[in-house]
Image 1 (cartoon, rainbow, N blue to C red):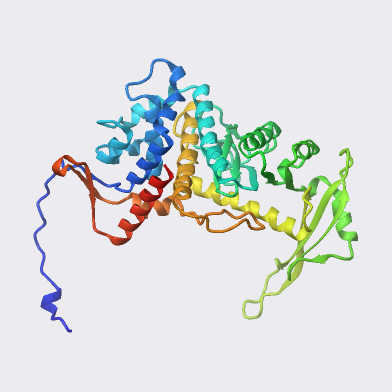
Image 2: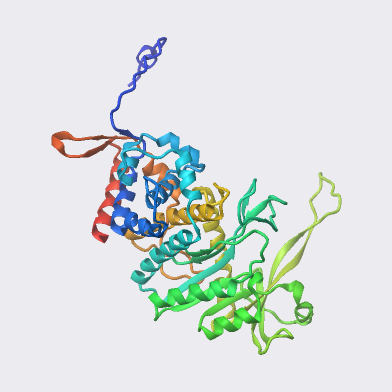
Length: 458
């Protein structure tokens, strides 16, 4: 049926008058699913216990301040002063159990008034929540990845230092070391460090602590780990062997000239696929006490020509090889060792998600403890978004060669746009508190899916 132009278009000249009333409107109706999650985990009470040793506490309480910080990051805000954009949101106040929210300066002072003990207790709580989930999964094989990530700051902050920073050379930074659980993409633990330390600086004690914590909740599981060449050392390899941990570590070529000669002398390579081939041997660096299994890999790749080319003809190129070496104690075929080791790249995706969606790379205060509290809050927000999905959805896949995450997780940013940032109104018809939203079928189904799943998991 055709419509006339007059039926489609209308003339509009006058702007509507603006009116503002206290109608208990919220911009974040989807936060109700996180309210249910917080209640099930008793998160508010557990956060409060992290700061009881401080004695005199601010009127809002440090535990509530950290919970506000977690909600702040779940909503997608970055700087502390952004709290003013949802200062009057009734659902945020209800989740926190407050009649009004603190302002940015109050939150900043609360962070600055914390100490190292507070940060350590919050770190322990983050680790405990992940370990509780790990114990409930009953996995036969647990994979942990270790790596560091640079957190730059444009100003001076306690505990920062100028170190290697590929993107922002010369800036002061932190360089925390992360332990990531491959099966869930959660952060098991974080060791906060200044920016001028090497990846392996003090890493042995941190790695050992993480392994023993995991083994305490999953004693029957096989623990395996993957690390880059910064952690390659006889000390770490012997420690992993002594703990019964399966591992694969990248080997730094620049430190062992003999590796180049071994590769050049090799005539026969086993084919893995069309571009990748490998061989393996028992070998040891001169200062090591015993031999280990080394896997040598070459990948066929294009070598870009650096000479001037005629643009009206073809661009010439030649084929060459990229090489890498891994040391491992795994007893599976070398091709599967390669797939397993390459799976550690998923940790970079976790870091990217933490910095983009949970604002991990923001340094809010000048105090070390305050910045550590913010970092652990960002980790907690990320882990809670994964916990929400694990409690309400089924596993998407079984264990793969690359140890891909077992769930098809939705990023926090996607969850935020689809569900959290939904307008609603809090009313009390016949005395019953009701959150009313627009009748969008997709939003309704997904919200009810999460709430039903959390109710069953409780």
